[in-house]
Image (cartoon, rainbow, N blue to C red; front, side, top):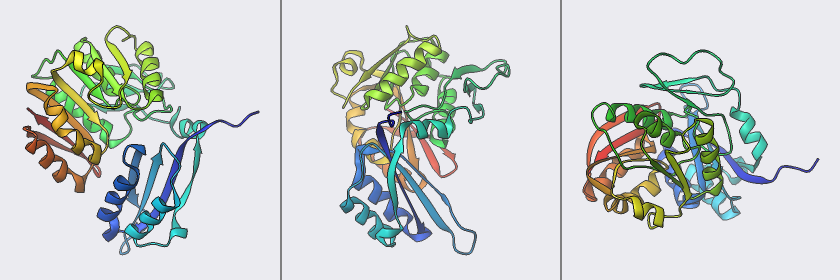
Length: 295
């Protein structure tokens, strides 16, 4: 049997706590849009408190990039594990293993969960796949919780999920509001998965998914200004998008920002304040922060 094509690479290293800020910045600087996911957690017991970083990349890392990470983390280059992660392996890490997630009124489950949906819930069916977003990650749960709170008082009409991954946030908005949602991603595979999920959740009429490398895409321009935008990406691209989003969000409109580590929240908040937004909510889920800003 032929091997599965490789389209995800994994980088792992363990560093002292003091190196965390420098290493987070180094990951963003080295990989930028190729950084699919970044997580860190305690790897040792006190009093050492070393932290293990794991990153998923869309392209193979170069030796220069790995050397830069080693220098930022204060570890030898040989201490970094880097290699391909087969698509099938990535899917297997989560498919059929994820418990259902409750986030406000949203209830996210995989196809392996057969228990009845809790009453009064907005149910979403999402399986582990080749795109990010099953509801398990703290950043996704933060976004869903923020959406639930916003939708209690704000009935948005023009909706966009920027960097949609599996389309989970687009699905959430469509399920709650029964309004059209534009779902965009720079990765065609994410758009394919979103299309599959909108069919599985019977939301084909509500969701339109497109591959869009930037905010200048014609599908975005045709639907602006938006009343509600979700963007669960990473801190660096979120900061870069601040002024562009200000031109695409209606006065009084909300933007839900996530994929932000605790130490990065102040920088993202400052960027959106400079672009004319005000911070109206800040949610914590583990080491991750979700920011809600309003224009």
